[in-house]
Image (tube, rainbow, N blue to C red; front, side):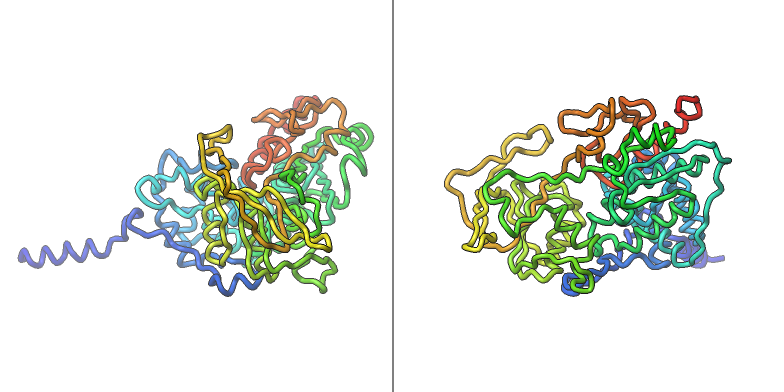
Length: 485
């Protein structure tokens, strides 16, 4: 064999080898074009095809130390489910996912993987991390599309009852874990539809409600009873659930749904919404389909949303889809300090949302009919970091200006609704009204009562709430197994 033949064989052998994972580019997810999606409420991101999912899964290095798992609040075996995707065993990947996560289609859409599992991905050290969230979404949607929903085996019945207050991410997760352990579980939801913030807070174009319903139905099929229109603290108190209705343990996952305002003049004018009311009317009560759904909402031509988080982005993008000609985000810090996901900020910019950064509202004024007409604002500059770790905004003297508008949405955060805590004996709260609970177990000051999610931490992410629900479920199991309930 000549040297030329040997060299040709070597070249051909090299060419036939699959590319190294680090050399495969991160697969972008198809989505609607900005000009199209800004005029509809259909989901923006369209999801991976099978080919895109496999190509992305093949980027995974299958690290032995699994840094991604350490970054996941519910401890999904990420490398294992991705390996199954790479082998095209999509149903196997779904089973692997659901062993640790009852809501993968939700997590794959709204969880900030870039700050959790993907943040610690080894590939991300020198390049782009594996798109774990996109793969999670693909697998969950594939399973649903096949219609082959698999219900895992449950432990033998324990003969004990657990009540779950709230059907948001923490409550649904705790319920799913406990029913698999053999407990009789009932979820009590104050609204007419289960899902908590997933149905009232997150818009259709980011998280379709049929997806949430699919996940809720899965938890119900596991054996969880879900009772809606049941306001714990009014319909029945926690004490009554335990002392009169026979529940040996209670998990409080009722969220943080009390809207904050800025306490500036004019916030009580007609045309000023809290983000909670604005999004609940549109998402849960289907105001965007009025008059098919009899839920009216004021549609403005010029809308200003105050805030810089995901809720502010959701509100602004919703206002645009309701027909606003101009939508502004007013935020008192710079883009670098915005707590919203980078992806959501980029989507808003692509759709034409205008950003008034380093700007602080100081007064809202009205027209002769009592409706909002303008917002007085002041320019800001950044000083030293404050307690949040972000640089403190400082007013610039003489920089005031007026911003004409006809709708204002205040999206500056939420607090703890006091109803459950104020009607539960011996339940300790902190100075902000959040329930005091152990970080690892969720145990509160009241024996048999556990808590987790936003009602403990304040507004946080879906996956962190799910992690709290999962840890609390294990702690409730230990509590009841020890005969304390």
